[in-house]
Image (tube, rainbow, N blue to C red):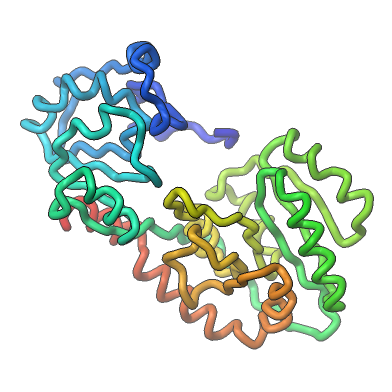
Length: 307
């Protein structure tokens, strides 16, 4: 990760992390992975593995029977398709956690349905994210932001063109995480006066991130459809806690979001949503607060352990 954030004091790293481990099937890769666990160090009632395909499953498999004697084993599946990794299917977990019914339907093909529990992704609720209420005025510049990877050039152009055509007084800030992405989109800063490009290196729990994001009136997501792989926008679950209107495409990434976000089917619908932000503010905030309550981190954690 690019964030300058250290592990907590209770974290001990004992294995190599595989970003795309669900795609691997090469034995040589599995044999090279670092994995060093002392069973005598394992204390507790639960052994939890998040996104199993990202860890050295071959090496874990030999220890798994002894681990099961010590603790209840729980796997949290982030995988959006059936992994190529052959060891993924060799574990007899006590419980498997998935985010929604799409994932349960997928993994029930390979694991007993009765051990697969649907538990939502948790929502983040920052302690210092209360946005000050500002008096609206008809000539106020609407501050809009998007977080992206740098490959959204054409989409950004379409959004800017559509907003200008609708005669909305706006400023659009696009936020990337590295200099490579910045360079890809830099030409837009030369041709679009209502457009700013920024690099964010702060973790979302950092006060600098919170102070920066609180100045925006809306955040637009430009995620493309994902018809061949199950997806969840974990970042939407982070940003919703800031109680800033989220304008999102009506696609697979936002399958679990309803009235707490504003959805568009095509970019041309975005100006209408922007113009009606103030009108929909009360209803949107009410739905957001209800969502945050239902997806509270402690409540989700309790469900994972005890459901």
